[in-house]
Image 1 (cartoon, each protein chain N blue to C red):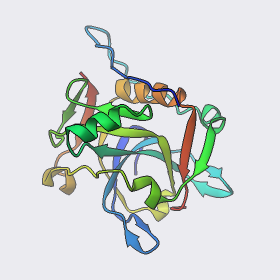
Image 2: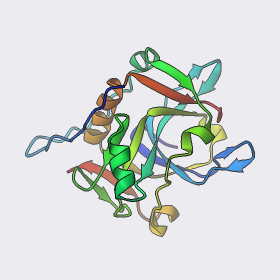
Image 3: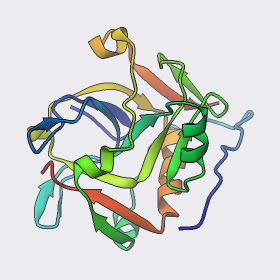
Length: 66
Length: 131
């Protein structure tokens, strides 16, 4: 797989998009696919330690483009 | 219930009798389908944090990782640590069999960028042992 350096484009005064696009399943299904176990897939993943407020449902996380 | 763009915390992630900790996932699709003969109604990517600077460099050099960093995104009520979404691994779930909580969401702008990122992937891994 080729290396891709990814940077967001700055939004500036551009109007925010409020519509979620749809995952293209046809595109996804055409990719070379390998089945792996959860254990294998998660071995390098560091779970995010969310705050107590988030875990209790008192606060919600919101991720937006800067 | 959850919808596209939501961030889920899956509480009962058990594989071969072992609890694999509480992992966070982004909902990519919430429509019912069949994969490898198994029914699903949730397609997700997992989220991860960086352990340290060296870990960050290693993970950001990998083309399948979508950054969630302070340089590029605002994370309201986050934990002040940068992380990434592992876009080349697709975890399939069945909502009825999964114990999850919606803990937040990605705004459409960033979610749509994530989909663009996924579109360019050359290969994928699928995780279906939760179905």
